[in-house]
Length: 298
Image (tube, rainbow, N blue to C red):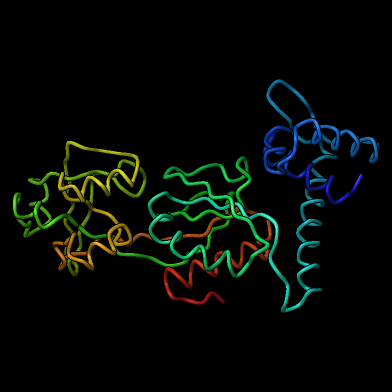
């Protein structure tokens, strides 16, 4: 039994809560994972896992072993990179999650450059507008927008983007151009019905604030659907400039009420707390910051 491989299998079992999920992460069969854990317990002479109908949980000994094993695996990876020096190549697999439309528009066009720079590295992308459980999915780093409040996660803000009121020129010809936030209540809005969206908005102009509630016949929990609906002229949208950067530049979409501001939206790189960021994660986060915001992380 290769001890580091057994440690990796055990760490994945604890983090995912099942042999099958750990096997998917390792890309091997479930029986191989079960056999490895059984051999590890026999070698150590202790029970590491409690098995029940509710899944797998570590024993006290198992939890202690997990903490040390995780740090050992991270240290082993860093040691290899340090020994290789400046010519060190990132390798293995990086698991990344992020919102569908943002990744499609602002990450995918640049991803070939990142992969070319790290030919020994593979990436698994998990695209969801809803926030997924990073530990259960085995995600190394997630790109998330908006306020981050989960204390079980470590979040690093990469930058922010303004929110705008946007629509097609044809829509505003048909419905009129609003001259004040209050006039939005007379318009059709396409509403993004997840956190970071909604129908209630507070506009600011200097020290003056105006709260409005927009209405619309179409709501969606998918930003891709909201974006396409706005592009088709169904209504206006209130969302980040990221969603329509190219269309704003071409004139296919226009923004209104530009003398009013909305709270900007932040982009964060999020990972499970208590886990040191791997070299792969650090390189990916730095790449996103440089390509999306043109900034260099310290």
